Length: 175
Image (cartoon, rainbow, N blue to C red; front, side, top):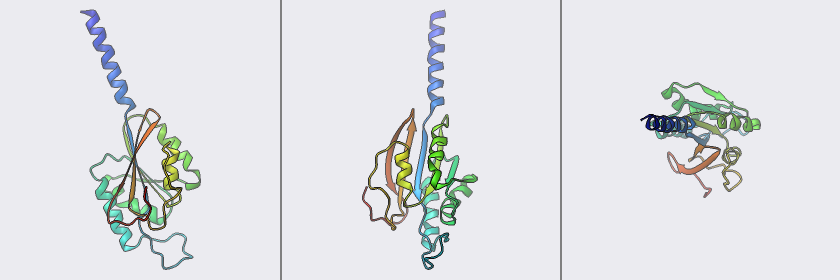
């Protein structure tokens, strides 16, 4: 009887340890469409189409577990994340796109099950995916690639990628 109890205890410990390791889901998107009427403005707001896409993102992720949202410190990225952050009652945390490896390390160090949204730019999104250990081509997204959503599942230092689209079709790159 003692042996059976020991075996059961070991199995339960193994089960709870594997659950504690968990899977972290990371969704990575480029900011939505921005206002482009002033080429000198380096920090424009989203356009009407962009605000609609931000709502589409919220709807796409509304039934997903999201407990962290990261955005670069620009209006267009924060406005893209804002509807979901409001719905989930999560504060948007800024990260520096030139130091995004720090963000990747922070996320990789998390324990348990997490759901994370990262909002970046056409020239950073695919690098973020690569920084998680997934080989993806091309180097960057094109200027009119707004509807891609990259879903990473992280477990035990391994990443699996699914590439999907959300909202109205608005892409030229084929992945």
